[in-house]
Image 1 (cartoon, rainbow, N blue to C red):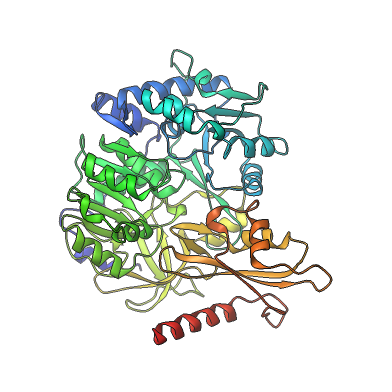
Image 2: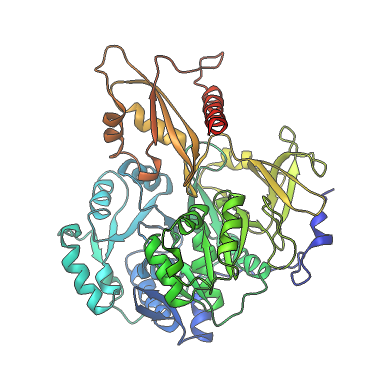
Length: 565
C-alpha cells in the first residue's frame, strides 16, 4: 500500500487529491484570446504581440499547415531558438492536428538526422540563418523530410531593430534554395485563418514527441499526449497558489525546445494570461536589464543562471527587487547558490523542483507557503504519486528514510516511448515510471535525491548522452577506444570528460586535434571539457569498457584538490 506522508504536511492552500480536466493544448491560445485579448503575450526586443494577435496568427498558420498536408499522424519539427514563430507554430501545428517534434538548435547534422528518421518527421520549421538552414538542407537530402518552412527574425522585430539586424547579421543570412520544398513562413500564413476543425482525443493523441535519454541509452521520443501536457500545466499552477490570472511577467530565457520551459513558461503564460519577456537564449546582461526594466516577477531557470547572476561584477546596478517566484529545475541546485541568491534578492523565493521529460515534466517542488527543506526536491504536485521502491524489486516500497529508486505515477506520465515498446516496458512497470534516480523520502513527505542516473551527464540543465559523444569520437580514424563520463564543474554542474586510447598503426593526435574533429559532429554542450589519452582503458571481466573506475579516480582527484586548497 502506497505511503503518502506528504498528506499531513501538505500546504493548506493546496489540495493534493484533486482532479484536472484534460483538453487539447492549442485551446490555451483560444482561451487566453477570449479572456485577455488586449494583454501582451510576447515582448520580443520591444515588439509586442497581444493574445488576440497571436491567436489570429496561430489560426492562419494552422490553415497554412493543413494546406501543406499537416493532419493527425504528421510530425512537424521545430528547429528554432526562442522567437515568436516558435510559439505560433507550436500551437498551430497542434490545432492543425499534427504532432510537434522539438529539436535543439545546438544539434549537429548527425543528431538531426537520427531524430528526424526516428520520429518520422515530415516537415521542419527553421530560421533563414547559416546556423540552421544549411544543416536542414543536408538532412533533407537523406531523410523523409519533404518540406522546410523558413522563418525570419526580421519579420518579428521592431522596425528599427529589424533594419539593424539586417545590416549587422548580413553574413549570417542563409540563401533559401530555389526549390518548392522550401516555403517561407509568410506564405504559410497568407490566408484567412480558418483551419479545418480537428477532433482531438486528449488522452490518446500525441501532442509532442520530446526526445530524451530516458534513464539510459540513445535519445528516445517520449510521447506526451494533450492530456499529459494540459494536466501537468494545471498541476504546476495549482501548486503555486500565489499565481493570479490576467497579469504577471515571466522571463522567457530558457529554451522552449526543452520541456521545462515549454510547460512552465510558454504554456504557463498562455494559461495565466501573463506576458513573456522572450529571449533567444540566456545572455546575462540582457536578462539583468530585462528584470530591471520589465519588473519581471517569475524567473524559471537552471542553477547555472542563478550562479551567473550572483557572479556578475556589477550586479548592484540592476534592480532585481521585482523577482518573487524563482524556480530552479533541470539540474540539482547547489545549496550555497540558493542561499546566496535569496540573501541578495530578499523578495525572491528560490524553489527547487524535480521533473522528467517523461512526466511533462513537473513532478515535485518545495511549497510556496510552508517549509522549504534545503537539498530537497519537495513534495509531489497535486494528483501525483511519488514512491520510493527497491531498486531490484520495483513492486516493493522502501520504508521512509531508506534509499531506493524514485518512481512516479500520475496523469502527467507519458504514453510511452515512440515506437519502442521494449524501452516503454522497462520504464513503466505496474503503472509507475521508473526514473533511474536514487533518493529517499522523509517522514514529512519531502524527497531527497542521492544520485542521478549513473551515465547521463547534466550540463547546465541539458542532457548529454555519453554514447552520442563516444560514437562521434570513434569516427576519428586514430581512435581505438573511448569512454565519456561527467566530471564536476563549478559553473555548469557537470561537463563531459573523454578518455581515449589510440591505435598504434595510426598517426598520433592531441586533444585540440580531436576537439576540432568533434566540433562538426557534436553540439557545443556535448564537447568534452577535457580529453585524457591512455594506453588502455578499464574494462569489466567480460571486456566491456567500464566507467566506474574512471569516476572513482576523478572523485579522488577532486577530493585531494579540495583537501589541499
